[in-house]
Length: 493
Image 1 (cartoon, rainbow, N blue to C red):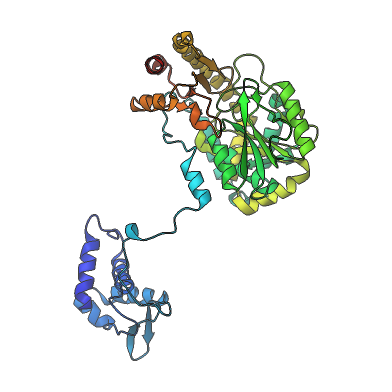
Image 2 (image 1 turned 135 degrees about the vertical axis):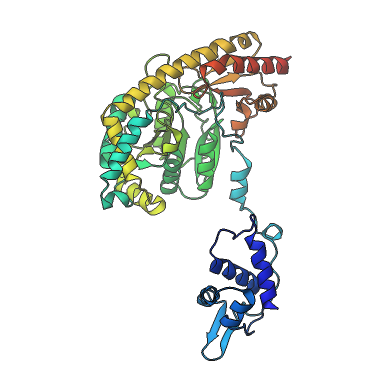
């Protein structure tokens, strides 16, 4: 009997763990009837009891039953014939018959694409939670929340209808001007505000450049080892990665004819991720000359240039570019907080309109009240103050970490690289060391470091531990570093 089956289905749904226990009664009846139809318990053309009969059998109000039947009729499961009743519609595809549905867990699915398998298999961060030595993590606990909330609320209260829409202009005008002014002074980038495109972060900026400047299957030169987020973004766009090794002077230009001509060249010249190497001036000029000769675009990821502790900041690669072929990528996540999800891209001058339009078509950018709050945050000097505080904080933590790791420098083949800038350093280890096992051992103790070998694309000669100090609270640096020292000593014998 249909009524008995529906009562059993409703009773199952009514339990605390029932999938539809929080829904109105008419919706629960709809779900029970829909499952009954999908499972093939009622075949095409079969007549249902009248709404009055069904309501009496189920001990429900007729309005509840009518509402469920009308919804199923509107969706094509049932058909109503005036003066005759309600029937199961013939909605099954031609040549098939109703059959019980399998649980989703047992269904055979096509699986990931070849590209999807590549993206899921390599370079993903297994542990993203904030822990003392997680590389790339910034300390946002000192962020001036009260000031930010006041500005944010102000712009939400004043938000006009156009501020709640998507934006086709590349971002909020005052924010783009503030970014342009900041980059001219601090990074020596030559640009106009119109070239600034506000994105949701470096990942989106990378994907936008890759989609607009290269076709599927074209080659991109990339550092080896490399930032896994860039690897994934470029692979997701269907590009062929050509790894080029990094040494103490940064990215190494290939020998003549040893690498196929690229469409894109991705670099982190001011603080190579993860080794921390700084691209020398000679190689910067060589890279730009090579890009011009090969007619390639250069993607400069300047992810943590704000934090340099030894000497003046390194000028950007874009500041040396006379041809306008460098796309400059930056982010607010390191100075403010990761969840702000705002970054910026300096697009090629001749392609600004194309970048704006593509950004609109692909990403539907918005968040204008948030961008307005950030623009005022910068204009009122809060960004500069936050940056000064962050520099002081990270400089102290860096010094503590360097002092705590000092005992390891007495071991053969151990050195520290990349500590002059940024939020991480690289503890380099002998080539025979098992850095993956060391990282796993430390992870069991709640300390997250990354094995340098995990960032390598082709080369097999690098071993080390990438250690972040951005989120390392001062009281935890010494004890956590002591565990790193102990694990490394034990592993190296």
